[in-house]
Picture 1: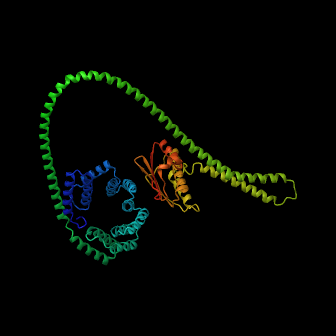
Picture 2: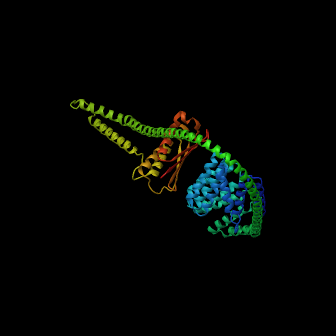
Picture 3: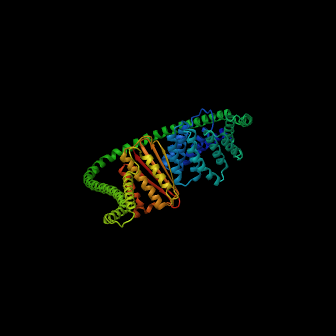
Length: 533
């Protein structure tokens, strides 16, 4: 009914369905019906009915059930609400939460739809056309592979609007024309209205008033077939009838409750008489039980003391494990610097020593040739050794310096790794809300964690793409590192020490953060980190 634009009839059917599902205590279907009602009402213009309660009921069920699909749809609708008020930060945050839930069930279509919404948010709220095009180009192949003309046309329409934002009206019009060449579902009238309105505005901007007039006529024809006012009236009447029926049901329930209370009073009186008879015998039994209870309490207190001692011992062991992980990380860093000194600087200094020995042994030998060239080579080797010392000292902080900061250092690292010959790896960095510097020690710790995760991906995952997202949300830094590598079986981490992941997890625990791995063999790896800042 929604696609036929008969929203009033659809609303009546959904209310009847909700009433039925409530009668059989089918909470999941009640939640689904609330979602459909909210979808229908938000597509109806100038409607006085408040759609929010239906969404609130759906979100409440999703939160209690913890089912990925329900949580994904709830987060998506919350993101839509923030998008309507141009709140990009929360829009992106809830859309990404939705994608995270959908990844658990490998729902590639819904993931593509959410990412297309992210592209729309970048275009409409921030006018960031580069990011918008990234998501539109990324999702279009998914719709084509699944042969979904409806979503292909929406993608073309979104790209056209983005080209308009960029000032490229000719390309925008060409993409609008692509939407005309796609057959939409038979009754999807309002989608076609949006397309015609966009094309009318585009032709106005390029002052092609002849074609603008053509689409104005098409809009008049198609809008004449939509009777919003009559539908709104029918929806309001249906809502009033539904609420009246619910009120009558509540009154009947209240009456039944009163009868039940009256019956309960009589029953309670009879129980009271019986209780008084049992009280005397109960008092004697209670005295005997009291002695036994005291003895059990003493035993329980002793057991609690033992448990407290075990807990304290466990905490000590965990603390020592965390310290061991930190020391292990420091030892790895020292070993790396030692290797650099031995492999890079050591060979240069050994060569310099050979040259100096040769010069010392032959300084008074008139037969030696090219003495000047030997001095120059020795000087060059000293300069080379000096530069290597500087490079090692500079690498000590890996770019996380007072005049740079965390984000430039990560981008510089991504650029170096992406440009390295033979890796075939592309790293993309996305950030939001990192406008101010963090504490330098925290920045270095975060950089080391990301550096180690990239190294693990290069060594073990054989990935071609890594996406790193950093979002500062309400004093919480959210880091998502996603790759398209071969994945792994997370259950074997304790045996192989997790390719360094256990050490990283201990670092994050030391920063009072959380660390989560979502990986499937053959389908890549997602690592989600939350660190309070």
